[in-house]
Image 1 (tube, one colour):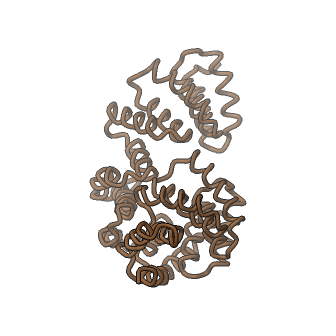
Image 2 (cartoon, one colour; image 1 turned 120 degrees about the vertical axis):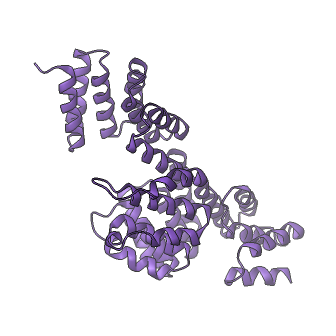
Image 3 (tube, helix red, strand yellow; image 1 turned 90 degrees about the horizontal axis):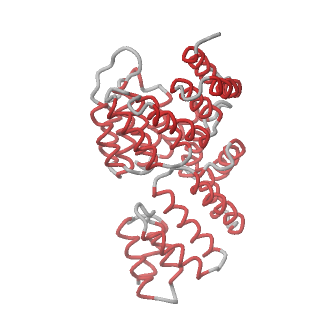
Amino acid sequence: ELGGELEARRIRLRGATGQARRALADARRLAREHPGDPAVGLAYGDAALATGDAELARTRLERVVTAAPEDPEGHFLLGRAHRRAGDAEAAEGAFRATLERNPGFTDATLALGYLLLDTGQWERAKELFEPLSRRLPGTGRDLGLVGKLGLVEALLGIGNVPDAKVQLERVRPAQRELGSVQRVSARVALADGRAGDAVRTLRPIATGDDAPVSLRVLYGDALYAAGETLAASRTYEAALGDDPGHPEALLGFATVLLRSEKADEARAILERAAAALARRLRPPALRARLATLEGRAALAAEDLDVAREKLRAATTLSDAPPEAFFFLGEALAGVNAPEARTAYEQYLERVQEGGLADRARAALR
């Protein structure tokens, strides 16, 4: 009979090679045979994570860190379980506990960095990725490249597109065809107003059957920004077929529906988006975008009280999209002229050109 620790390692290997269900069943059996064994607890928590059962993973891994509080791996896996469960604060605490015990635990450093990005903590993410971006290439994973790409994402979140472009230019030519680099390059192009470049960059990597949902949604965003509304709609719908609760896909599809003057359908999609954002970790900017779209949909449906409520709420949020101010002005026009005027002026402080800017200036005359 195999010892508990050796069999626990084999269970973890099964989970990592696509045999998650079998790994979880074997972990349950091993836990009954070796109660209180931290190695077995790690295998049990890891197997639960592999099957997507975040709550079971949290329960098992909390027991591990209680039994073996100085083991960094237990804290790391617990951080992953907290993240999967949508508990950002607990996840950050667990990743930091990992790094206190092992400052060289690279996976924990990266997991913390990606958590900061996903929760919109741009300055803190920038501080974490900057030193990584200066790492020289070595054997194994190129941490310098990972750091540069994370730093670019953080700079885009801050709104510093020029510095993001500079960092991207520092990626070595031989690495520029990597999918991870192309994805970030497309995000920079979108932020820089070059939607066509983003579409051309993403098309080869986002249209295959094996393309991740998040990449396909980014492609939908690029298509929409490039004026390809029908193609964007099809892209969002296909992504939602694989992940019905993907927040960005839902918001993108709702945007297309509003442009097509389908307010009732958009409101139904936005209800799903609100439920998705309650479950998944995303930056505050996405909640501001949701509130703006909810206000726009209510305005299109002539539900003016709801429109004003949602748009006022959107304009108070950090990273509120500029159009929130414009549509607030529209919702207030004829009812509260001073507040409407202020909203239009706030929009024009952020955007000086384009159709909405022309309409805002006309409303102020």
